[in-house]
Every structure is written in C-alpha cells, then in structure tokens.
Amino acid sequence: MTKKAAVLAVDPVNGAGLFQYLETFFENDIPFTLFAVAGSREIRTNSGVRITADATIAELKGREGEFGALVFACGDAVPVFAQHAGEPWNAALLGEMKTFAEQGKLLIGHCGAGLLFDIAGIAAGKRVAVHPLAKGAVRHAAATDSATEIDGNFYTAQEEHKLPELLSKVVEALK
Image (cartoon, rainbow, N blue to C red):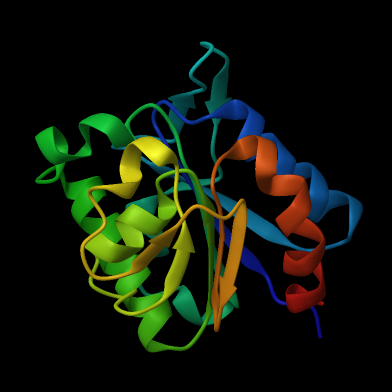
C-alpha cells in the first residue's frame, strides 16, 4: 500500500525543491497533501510565484495518522527561522516533525531539513545531508558532506540539485 505524504512548505519555499517532490509524487501515484507552514494557505516561492496550499500546518494536527511520511520543502524562510521560531506555524512545524518521528514515519527533506530535524530534537545520532551553510548549526545529528543520506527513516539531500539522487529511493520507501 502506498504511503501518503504530508508535504510541508515554508514561506517563501524553494520552488525548485518543492516542485521536484510534487512532480515525483504525481508521476508515481503517491498521494500527498501540501501544507503551508504559514498563517494562511497562501505562500510563495523564493522567486515570487504564488501558491495556494491544500491546508495550513495547523490543520495537520490530529491528521497525522493519514500520512506515512512528512516531507520538508526548504526555503528562504529557514535562514531566518531563529527570528521567527515563536510563530505558531513554526512551533507547529517542529511539533509535527516530532510527532511523525515518534510514530516511526519517514522524514524527508533537503537543504535545511536536517538542521530542523535536529532543532526538533528528533535526529540525535542520525546522519543527515545538510546545506553547507547550515552544517555548522547542527548540534545533535551527524551532519555530513554527502549529497544525500538515508539513515533509518530519515531521508535527506544537501540541496535541491541533489534531490534527483534521493527521490528514487523515497519513491521506493513510499510504495
């Protein structure tokens, strides 16, 4: 049975990464729901393209059982995450990461995903591929220089241009 993916997109999201996930899932008949990590369903890409997500991160609470994977689509909001960590949608983001990890579900992401998995307190000792600019901020996970890493239920890519190397393995895990 194919696992459904909860795709989380920050505002602004890296469109190149987000669209690779969505197209791969569509082409491989993997159901997904796009959740905006924002106060509304209206978000944008880092190049200014406006997107209307299916729901907000707040609407994922209580629906975790519908999904077998959480996908974190990184974006330009991540470099300033610390300045906005107290926003309700960012608190919900970290909470959902923790819930999915506690349930042993797949955690997938690129760029700063490994750092956020670390901040959420769910990646201690796990190998994660992280963007070189975020690598130094990772404290409890093992941030590597690899293009991709798979460690248990954690699937990470260093950045969006490395996603093609990871996505075939993600599809296998979701099918």
